[in-house]
Image 1 (cartoon, rainbow, N blue to C red):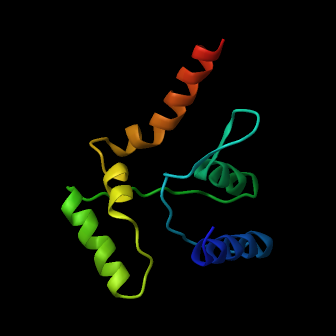
Image 2 (tube, helix red, strand yellow):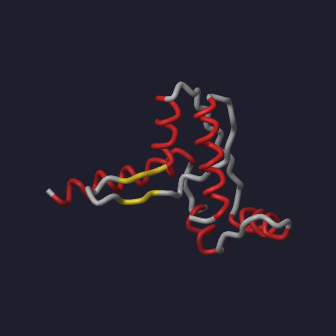
Image 3 (cartoon, rainbow, N blue to C red):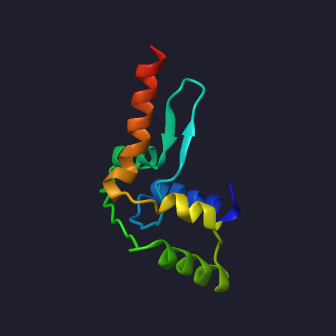
Amino acid sequence: MDVAQRGVEAFVAQAIIQQVPFAMETVFSYWKEQPDGTFLSKIDKFLELRREGYFVLLCFVGLSNYDLSVGRVQARDAAGGHNIDQADVFVRTEDRTPLEYILKPLKDQIAKAFRER
């Protein structure tokens, strides 16, 4: 976990403790398999926020093609922000709708569960 991510997580934790409203940006590419075969994801954070009484609003922002995505990352990096490897940008921008992007890992997990039984 890098410094920026730890900073955001600390900010969110403090906001929850202080029960203040906040906004944050994230991606849905985080899926970490657990020893029991389940996965942790950003959805877990949203569920935690709901349990803490927050109203969660998701806004999906997408660019129309790969080159725009690469350009956005390069501009952010040049301005002192974090860089993302172009291979990761390509993986994240394959031809899927936002809903398909969110549901694919769940679909894969369900398919895996049926194969294992």
